[in-house]
Image (tube, rainbow, N blue to C red; front, side):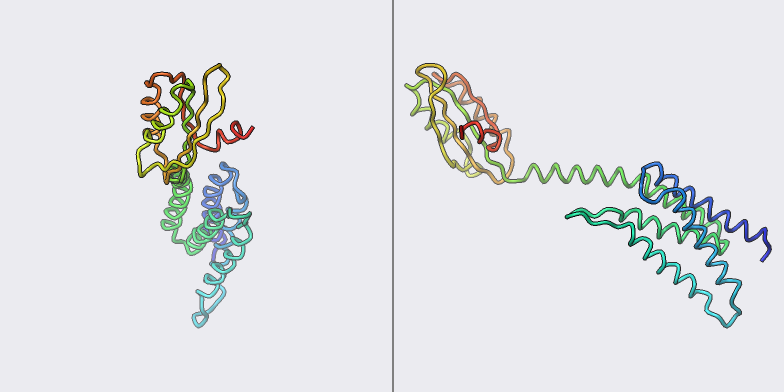
Length: 239
């Protein structure tokens, strides 16, 4: 192999590795410009070695297969597990793909190498924001369907306490809301009491809670009404 041809193949592999590494470096990932360039260049050199060091009876694909295995060990080194979180998977996959790009450049399949590098960069650049949005949407959806305990707090006159308690129990639609408890304590104003009703639900129903508060606020003798999620008010009523 001529030195010019060798430098051309290795140079192409290095440039493509740098292109992939630029995106990783820009996002401050563990493996950036230098790592991706070296992985791509090394893969190209190994493939050139396998192509020009064996005679026709040798298995030229054996070295290429070992590149895949070797990059697998390198990729495993960047994967970290902390509790239930696993990081480094994208970096490991990018290392693996970069090795493939370098191998294509070493075999002088330059069109395929350039296309492969472009696909790797595009996948990392565009798919990560999409994946992040999908994760946020999933978390928001899980939050919406998660069990929730609603609290209705009413301040009213003592003379209508019994009536308001009865209305509170019927204000939240069943079977979505199940009444768990009703508490009473004196209000700051004279002849006033504060009522707290706690309901359990299998999912968030904020609109129903708003409707219940609106209906209760229109009752005679009621001075204030509000709703909240149970854990937000437990500390206040435990004092």
